[in-house]
Amino acid sequence: MKILVIVLAFFCWLNGTAQNYNKKGDKKLRYKKVEEARSFYYKAYMQNPDNYKTLKGLVLSNQYLEQTVEAEIWMQKIIEQGKETVEDVYLYSELLKTNDKFEESEEWFKKYAKLRPNDKKTKERKLYYEELKTLQLNSNYAISPVSVNTDDSDMGLFNFGKVVIFSSRGTKKLVSKKKSENWSDLDLYFAEKADPVRFENVEEFASKLNTPFNDGPVAFDPTTNKLFITRYAPNKANKIEGELFYHMQLVIAAWRNNEWNIEEEFFFNDKNYTVAHPSISFDGQLLFFASDIFGGYGGADLYLCIKNDGEWSAPFNLGPEVNTEGNEFFPFIAYDKTLYFSSNGHGGVGGYDIFSATHSGGVYKNVKNLGLDVNSGKDDVSVSFDPFQNKGYFASNRAGGKGLYDIYYFENKYMPIVISGVVRDYVTKQALPDINIELEHENGEIISSAKTDVEGKFIFTSFIQKAMVFRASSETYKMVENRLDMQSLKKDDEFVLNVFLNKK
Image (cartoon, rainbow, N blue to C red; front, side):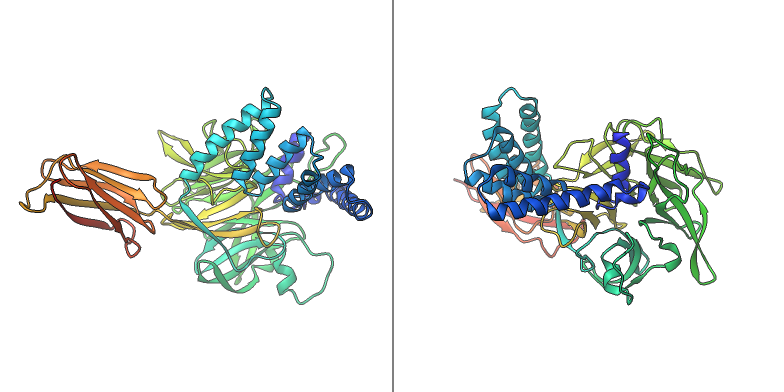
């Protein structure tokens, strides 16, 4: 029961709208109660700002409401008064981590580790910070928020020809001409792309497709020109411990009479399980989705259907290389068949991270975390790449955003290029073998190294970066060091160098 509630809450987009799957609206009621408690604690704080229980109540209520920046501020007040307990030290470290203050988080964790050296959490967190350092080195992306973000939830951006489709709850407040306090949950919208982060002329996408509940994300089947859409099942699930649930399902829309209309439900739908988050390959032959159907490896797993003679096969579970005891959501199949998805079961930075997996020998494996920047201390979900895989979009509820969930554009900072050249003696112009060649990042990290061959040549693949230092040296020749400017290069360009060294 508990696991099912957590899974379903996430499928309701993790934004506090889980009341839609539960007839009694328990989630909404709990949030309301916690908000009332927070208000009570704040009034008590105004009367007695030094009371520990009041401050701790503000910490925990804000943490429950996912207002982690506010929770951190209230915890600081406890620490300033010197009233923190051992558990408070750990909680403060966790809040700092969630708010992407990783160095400060580690410092407070070290304080906790000294107080509780044999605690299970101490051992787990030591491994976490070691992994985090690796993820920092593997951070290859620059990110920027997009213009359609609102003060509510926005996510699930999908490139659809010359426009983008996305799901939003806050956009309706901006574009609707009707005033209402009972706004629906996430609806589908489309916009024209002026540039990667700026969208114009935002409008409702196909009003017939939007329901009073959450709609999206979507996927497009290029072989049938149909849209696959995540939405709530029209029928409630069977009773589970006295509660009634409405699961997420997939419906298929077709373009008829100059408008989008729901044509059918996905054949695998079951009112007692969730089937959601579709992604279809560019050739229309592969369909990926997430489901918590019985028989998986964890709360929710990723599945694959293959198109045979125009019909989808029975779903295949992607197996234990991809699926874990946790939850896997939001699959996206890229142009080269690399699979991207969100998971809380593969470790990582925090919350749900975005991972990649490659196809080999009939299975998806080699799961890798996309690193910091794309991933944060909170939840990072609904990733999509453009066909060339150097850029794309995802959504996150990370600290510093505009709303509950925001859409971010990301671009690979390190596009591959070939660096080659010949090293010669400055006086004789003879080629020099066994010369040490190094490329150094502006932060001092050695990116690549090589030695010249018998003809004085060297060649290796590196990445385009804002600043890079080239270095050539040996025991008998003076070192040459130059800063390389490669910002004008494009993906897979070759950077050719002619290097001349003087003897020592």
